[in-house]
Image (tube, rainbow over all chains, first blue to last red; front, top):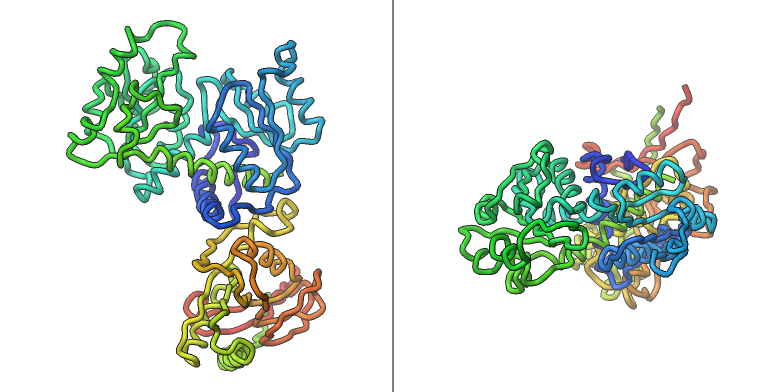
Length: 307
Length: 182
């Protein structure tokens, strides 16, 4: 059978369309496992995985931990708060100390773009990037495309718009790579200050008017405004952002077609999405979370078999 | 590669018929019994047994397919990773008499994995194993079939190939394949 072309999942940029398909097919099988009375398989029982989180996370961390436990791996969790990182230990030292305890895989989130790439050049363990700064968040993009495939049958040929803070979003970049590799058309939409200057070079359409973007698309992936990453004012106020870029149920209902609404979470209700839109039948936000576990099981399983 | 025909399509039909009658002897009207084919190649065995039983008894025995990939004990010990197949079991096996069906019994490792995987669907009353071909003296585990089509002596370097009409060839046949070193 095929296997992944990579030893680490650092970003969608580094993997092929075949890799993505293989991950999806494996995830289909794991999704089936997750719907059984006993939701656990013994595949990774001799593997130890460290979840190393240098940045806050709820969904990704829980989802990874659950995926690891469903595969029967041993799991250790590490978060930078309350650790020796505060005492001045370097990233490489921290990770080497964890690896000295015989750990086989590292799932890492870090606020610096490229941190997992740096690590992959210095250590032997398989690395899964769970988000590196504003760079990539590969498993999120995989589960987003997987959810589109599940809802619409295929990703190829679909029109997907990513709306919001493209500049600070690792989800946006990974999604652009994944969707393009799978043959979808991608558009980004947001205030001009939140769109990277050279985004067009990635081959995406750019739209400033959210209404026109929604009329164009089959799927809208709405992103959170990442205030914690913004070191300057990119727009006058959140209220003004909501006024121009917020999506509500009324707007969705006024379109002459059904679109699929996605959000990688956490939602700021009343900012980028109104509550009635987030909870409407357009939304597949909770399906995304459900699929996240199956996708992460597939990624961990396939990488572990590359040992 | 050298192929020797060990069971032709007429013989295979008789064999399946005999296995079905043996099953009926033990399971009566199959009211508490289910058939589970082991993916990938036990699937057709299970289908064939189910359709033959339907022809004889007129009842449809619940039949499912079980994939054992995630339960195998050779994960990370093989050269190439194993491809997973779909599991399709739309009934609970709690308290049922389970007939596991596969084409060839060799080391017994996939049957062990199957018993492990099967427990995710409940605790069966008992489990039996039906195989078309039992390769003698090759077991790695203490596993023996309950119903056997044919016992064959074979070398480790040989392989037993079960072909089904339609999916593989024009006729049902069972071959003993010998790889010739070049």
